[in-house]
Amino acid sequence: MKALGDDDGWGETDLVAAEERLGIQLPSALREAYLLFGHRHDLTSNHGVLLSPSELYVDQAEEAGLPA
Image (cartoon, rainbow, N blue to C red; front, side, top):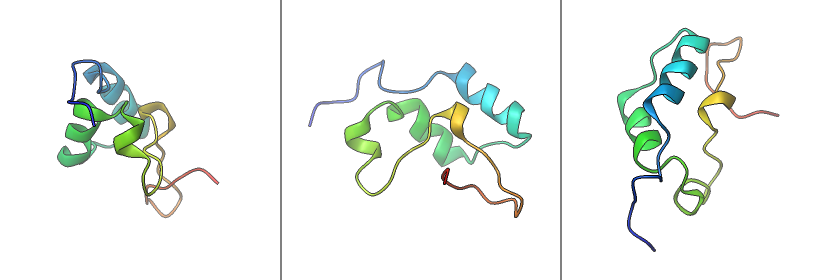
């Protein structure tokens, strides 16, 4: 496994745009994960998929989820 690099995470502007679009603040642990290694598919797709910030959504039950 390669070490984390500067380009492995999403940018702050991507996360802020997602939060503004959703009207919520992402949990700090999730924000940190996106910032540090959000682009690293080898770290984010072993047991599911980490959505890109633009794909995040809140359903009618006000729960986060994956697209159908």
